[in-house]
Length: 199
Image (cartoon, rainbow, N blue to C red; front, side, top):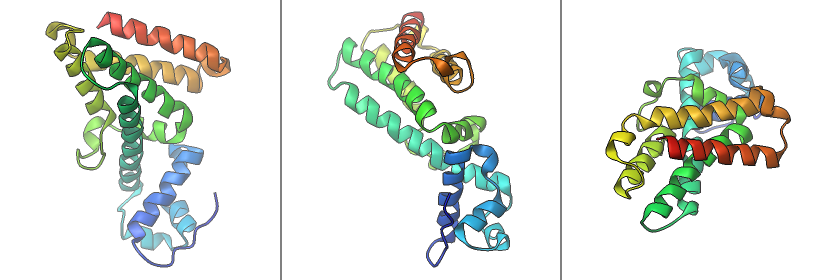
């Protein structure tokens, strides 16, 4: 990562930018105040004026990561299908799951950071289009479209989230690391089929 000397403007945002880049390139463990300050070109004391401790910085970077995550999901859902009906609702639901795996595998450092924090740790206005909220909307849409019944909808977020998260972790840290793109796509199709038919 190249050092980016800080000259003027919003130091807090510059620190978040640098810490986000550290997380993206090296994972959550790389996000420390001293190194973040060094990347921006200020003293670590200057960084402490904006973040009380490392956890405060991690919370800000996690919110940034979750916003990026949510935007990717929103984009993929919007591109999946337009209109009403069962097929469109199912396509948008599936797109949300595919977007989850895409973010995990293309932005693993930010994905790991976003997923180690509790949902309650991020203020609703800090993360635009939160992925969990989008998943809830897609499940509600399945009920409205008549794909699933209201009783099947209850608490379905956990089952759906667990399936795509587990699949993502198998790719990042498990036996699917060595799988070809074609095999991963085939396996993801099966995971999404099981989720769709199981809820």
